[in-house]
Length: 114
Image 1 (cartoon, rainbow, N blue to C red):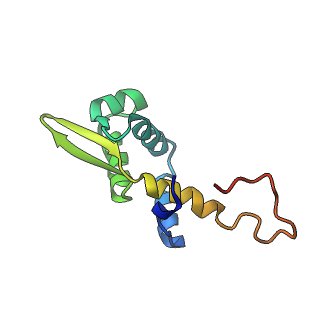
Image 2 (image 1 turned 60 degrees about the vertical axis):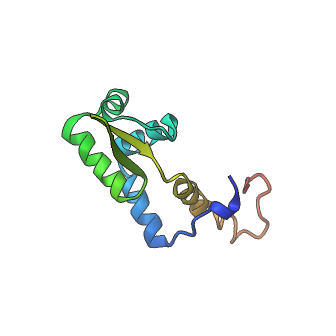
C-alpha cells in the first residue's frame, strides 16, 4: 500500500475503532468481509461463513458499520455486506507500529516498516 493513503489516526479514533474490533465474532466477521473483497457477500452467506446469525449478526454489523469499517447495501432482495475501510484498517496497524523502537538506544534492524 502506498503511504499517501494512510489516514492519520488520533488516539481517540484508534481506540474507538479497536473497541469495535474487540470481539472475536466482530473480528471474524470483518476478516470474512475482507476476504470477500469489494463485491462483498450476502448477509445470509456471511452468517453461514461466520456461524453467527440473526440478531447477533445484526448487532455486530451495526457496531462495525458505526465504526465505518463495513457497509450494508440492499441489492434486490438481498442485503450485501462489504468491508469498506481498507485504508483505515491499514492505518490501525501503522498506528501501532509508528513509534516502534523509538525509545531504544539502537533501533532493531529486524523490524519491517514498509
